Length: 158
Ligand code: HEM
Image 1 (cartoon, rainbow, N blue to C red):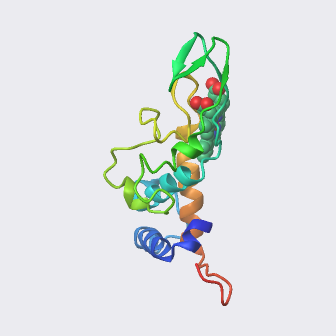
Image 2: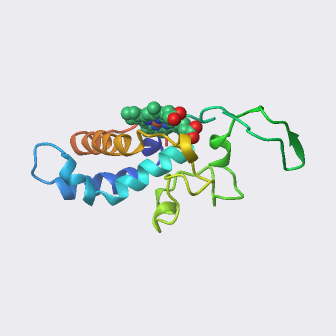
């Protein structure tokens, strides 16, 4: 919601999509979610800039290896800084900007095969709640956008 307040064009676009699709119904339901394509991009972009588990869960290396010239002994506790990777300009254009459209082509997803974007982790310990979390986030955000208009307090600029 903070990012939407700071990016009024994104807010307008997401809200228009929700309101056009749900028009006339009292509430957003799970059946409506398939049509809310832009909303899904907004959530993906939110998880890129604000991953809920920024360092994922700790791992332990199972064998001695060399990574970027550093020796990593077997048994080392390793953290993956997904927060930093998700903002790395090597992988993202205008990395610090909130631009849901960057996911429009659908080629990058959070299912654990694009290592530049792992808000749910990857590999054997990937978040098993991912498919449960997705519709919950969509329902909550769609309902907020459907029922409420929000604006910044008087005099505050995005
Ligand atoms: C937006 C919502 C959520 C995000 C961003 C998220 C993210 C994550 C991340 C990053 C991990 C660590 C994965 C790794 O280190 O590779 C994880 C693990 C886990 N998540 Fe989620 N999660 C979410 C929602 C949920 C929900 C709704 C559930 C259960 C209903 C859930 C259950 C779990 C469990 C049980 C693990 C541990 C898996 C393991 O270590 O084998 N998560 N989650």
